[in-house]
Length: 102
Ligand SMILES: [Zn+2]
Image (cartoon, rainbow, N blue to C red; front, side):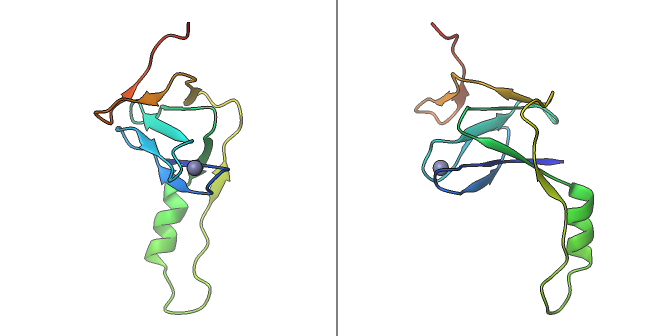
């Protein structure tokens, strides 16, 4: 399942990758730690996308009309695969870093 972050400030949606991903305004950010687990900052709202229904919608894309729906959802506040990292930030290299809070 793809993990996406939504930014309530700029309304951007970004798919999380193993490299730090930020929204257009830069307030929401997150990174995939491994295949299933992600770290996001407090501003980001995690969104899940059902890969199965998305693939089905792509394969059943109509030639006209509204299109084929798929399943996406705003993840619960408590999700074992999502960690809120209050110290997530971007170094000049663009790599995500985490520092212990002081
Ligand atoms: Zn933003």
